[in-house]
Length: 119
Picture 1 (cartoon, one colour):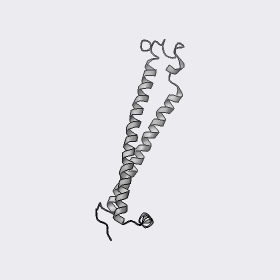
Picture 2 (cartoon, helix red, strand yellow):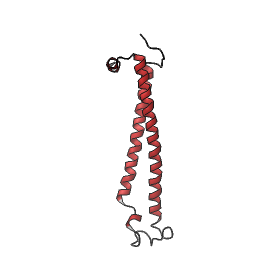
Picture 3 (tube, one colour):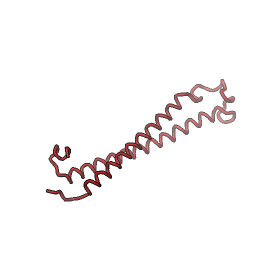
Picture 4 (cartoon, one colour):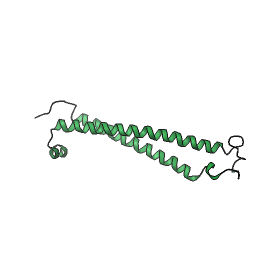
């Protein structure tokens, strides 16, 4: 109601505007999810390569915890935090997408899509 009074548009026009805003939000969330999943694949691939390089025969290392490995080639606690941060981003996109889809459903229940404005 507040949205309709404030902008001086009809109820149907306001609902259609809200539908467009929700559509843009869903599109942006899907793009964010895609880039986050691609980033997660890159992160996991890098961590697997780091962990495999510590074994004999895979990266020239001398064994588990070998002193011959450079510090950039061993798994660090920060690597785990990077994975956790990426998981948090994926979770936030999912929750936001779920909220937008719920809001879209609520708008459709209150005001079914219509092209005509009620005078």
